[in-house]
Amino acid sequence: MYMNLNEFLENNIPGYKLLDVLYNNDDLIVDYYDVDAEDLPKNNSPSDLILDKETVVKAIEAKNIKMSEFDKILNKYGWYMSKVKDDYIHILKLNNMDNGYYDDENKVIHGLYLHISPVKPSIILNQGLKALASTDDELDKSNTMKRGIIYPNKRVYLWKLEDICSIKKNDENIGKALGRSLRTLFDDINARHYGNYVYIAHLPAGVRTHFDNEYGEFQPARYITQNVPPSYLKFAGTVEQISTIIEYSEFTRLREIFGV
Image (cartoon, rainbow, N blue to C red; front, side):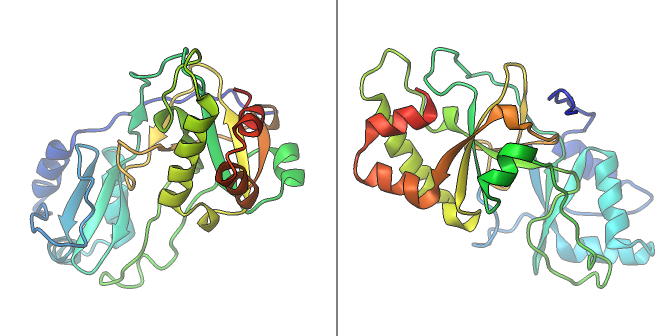
């Protein structure tokens, strides 16, 4: 039996307040990284911060705190450590919600999301999408370690189609607009990196998703923290099949697949 898909905004503090808390946390002095480096994320916002890795390591070692324990301090205030590089640590808000301020029920693909997976339809359409956790057993091995993107809670990743194609139901060339938008999305995210099978998720009204700030708030990347039941899902085809339909401008077929 699946739980109802509800999302709740947990308490968190804004970035400037988090820095103040860390700076005054029993002399756990952690400074904001303010150097213009080419490899820094370009989507800095109130929902993500860059910390100077050297000052973090010095601060936690002085207090005999493990990196995972530092991450738990961040979690307490509604943040988490996402990425650790040579000279900086990228931290994000745990619950940065998409409140749907610009959602419009008159849009053709309102409430539709894409999920790309290596898992076959015979499994997904029977079991649904399972929220999975990301873990890092090596986090405390060394405070000088590096790691890629990781997150502390179970998630199902989705791409919000309303963000890539805002065409209204009475507009012309719906199929062409959708095809153009999907081609751009597939290219931007390197769709085959996520898997070969494309699913359409139709989430009920009122289900709010989280932004994934690794992509930035102006991208269609979203996630929810609960399972998605099979009744909300449709298999659209493989990445190659959808790409071929777009390439040959089979827009009627594309509309049939997406039900628009």
